[in-house]
Amino acid sequence: MIRHIQIVAPAGDLCNAAVHRVKRVVADHDCDCEIEVINDFKKSLSLQVFAVPGVVIDGTLKSVGRVPEPEELVDWLFPE
Image 1 (cartoon, rainbow, N blue to C red):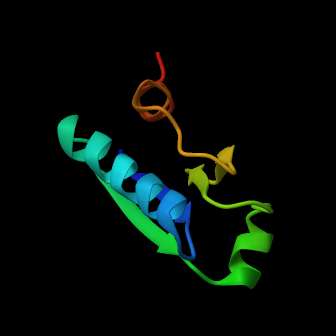
Image 2: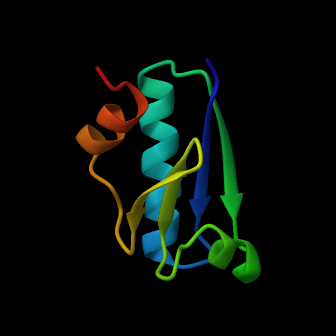
């Protein structure tokens, strides 16, 4: 199953860190994922992301306003 990851990250160090971390976890775990980086304000609001960065996986908002830890990302991508 292909996971769809949306990262709301318009600009800045924190947003760049979130994009980098998500991409690293996906690569390290050979996850079949489609990653979309969103920098459009209206689209971020439609995803209920009111603070950046935001991480949405398969339509579910997982994180807002911080860079998720690698362990969290693994848990979200590979639930038991």
